[in-house]
Amino acid sequence: MRVPERTSVEEARVAETLKKGSRVTGTAREQLAADLKRKYESGASIRALAEETGRSYGFVHRMLSEAEVTLRGRGGATRGKRAPADS
Image (tube, rainbow, N blue to C red; front, side, top):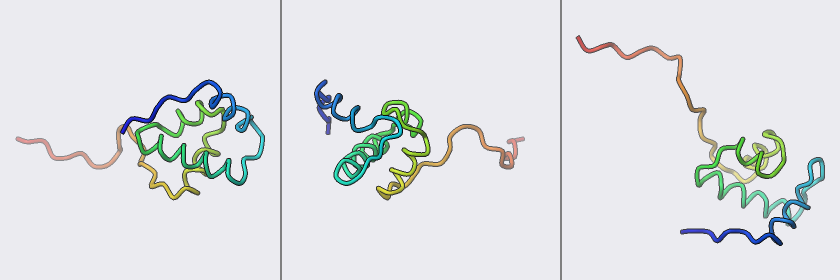
C-alpha cells in the first residue's frame, strides 16, 4: 500500500508542531507516534527519522517505544564466535 506524499501545507504544519525543544502532547503526539511507527516499520532508521523531524535520536526512540513498536536490532558486523571453516 503506497501512502500519498505530504503536501507542503501538511509539512509546514508538522514542522511547526515539531520545533526543536517544543513539547508535543495530546493528539499531535499520538499522530506523530503513529507516523513515526509507520515509517519505522516501512524500513526507515531511527536516525533518519530523527533527522527528518529535526528531533533527537532519543526523542524518536522514546516515541517509538510509547507506540509499542518492536525495535530492530543493531546492524553491522557482530563479534560473536566465527563459524568453523569447511575443510
